[in-house]
Length: 150
Ligand code: HEM
Image (cartoon, rainbow, N blue to C red):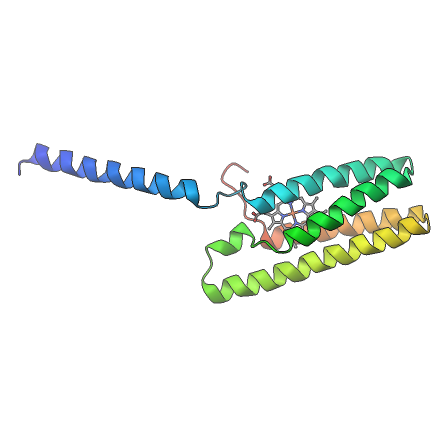
């Protein structure tokens, strides 16, 4: 084979692998485009709506959004963070278990929020919102993969 022929075949091979890789990528989870990121995105919207309602002590709207957060936290707990998906089995299981603990703590904070709402304790609600914010930051530092576009 002459030099030109070799170049052409190499080009064909790399084109074929690029196509194959591309095809695999369509099926594999993408950073920031998982079921979990969708659920988290919804949590963000409900948390914002909760905060807005809390400013005017609109207890009914607060309860609605807190209930939605509780539902979402419970389904999100069943997912595997994207960051854990490329880890070897043992590390993945460890991360999954720690992630679940983190989500359980979020559920506890949301349950405490419900208790505070039931006694219309606005100060307690504010303190818990702060705790949820801190806990979320910690959870994201540990389990959220930074995507290339972040
Ligand atoms: C109410 C509390 C929370 C809110 C509002 C929230 C919000 C978000 C948002 C907006 C994203 C980005 C979604 C996107 O890419 O479009 C995200 C991603 C993520 N969050 Fe949260 N988050 C909360 C709590 C937590 C906690 C407690 C943990 C861990 C214990 C956690 C773990 C993650 C992970 C792992 C991702 C990346 C998604 C993936 O791996 O597929 N989040 N979150």
